[in-house]
Image (cartoon, rainbow, N blue to C red; front, side):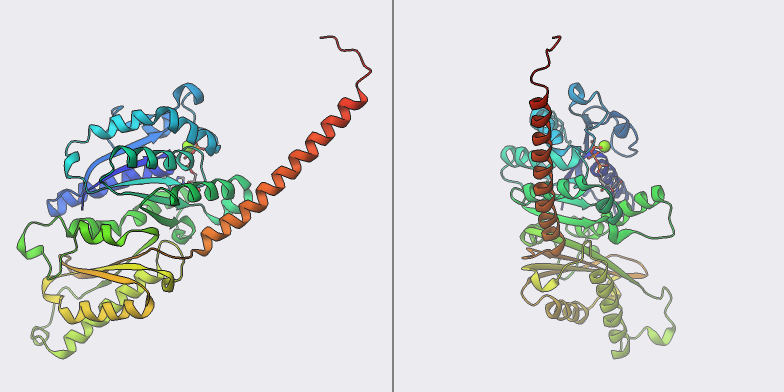
Length: 391
Ligand SMILES: Nc1nc2c(ncn2[C@@H]2O[C@H](COP(=O)(O)OP(=O)(O)OP(=O)(O)O)[C@@H](O)[C@H]2O)c(=O)[nH]1
Ligand SMILES: [Mg+2]
């Protein structure tokens, strides 16, 4: 599957940069392309120049809202991010048009952090613009949810996330949810942590996008997973997970024969990888709520067998009984068996519901504070009414 990836705001741009790196890896390791164009869109000029992989010209790093913000971002006001996207959206569309092999693109992937200003405000507007302009291609939005400490220290975080999620979910073909808090690893400093988190966020997309682009017979599985399967799977609220299990690189001579013991070891390794994928899902959710699901197993050709794929299928069926499940196998990896899982068309997502509830409270709070303020201003005007003004 080939994507055009567009990042908005600092978070979105950095993750888009990571997708550019992923494409470099696919090209270098596997000789295939999985991305036809990567673009970074921001109101902040300095953040745009901090990227490393996205081409540095103005058609790939698009500065919007220059007049309004002076190139310094919108300071977490996502209404302003949305307004700027409405004014400068054409710049983004013009940039996308320059993608070299645009005609091969299967879908758009737009990326932003929900809690900021630029990305959070611009992504719903741009999703709408791109959908209007390219009606035949699905548009998927990958939304990064804030860390816990951001939610507790700043009200705007919750409010921005709620407004962004509500807007995006009504327009995007699917919303892939990524919870920053799930990726926190205590042993990294924050900056390294963000880079590391971004790498972990894009990792599940590697095999998923590569599998359907393989041309050589030896890398094509018994059931190839292609763009059609992914497009049929992605709908509404979506989460993604990835897990791997190491295989012994060297087998002892007596292990070479295919016997039932080896088969059961492979199945065991497969379940281990899928277990990890399910426990590392990009956002905690209840798999019972999924209306659609997909899994992809990648392993060396000789480790792959239909029993393994079937076992994983019934394992997933137990966890997500209401889902239509699609699958694929990808004979590729060396010394490793990995499983990528998508749960989609989730009927309920607790975290999203919490944002909506809490921001309802915040909105009422702000309203009553504003009313109180207006009352006080009126009082002070009242007592000053007999004082002459110098103006
Ligand atoms: N995973 C990840 N999250 C990030 C990164 N950068 C920022 N965030 C998160 O994104 C949210 C803030 O959004 P930003 O992208 O910084 O904001 P922006 O869209 O640039 O908007 P303004 O700076 O307000 O104009 C916070 O929840 C951050 O934790 C990143 O590189 N990776
Ligand atoms: Mg910013």
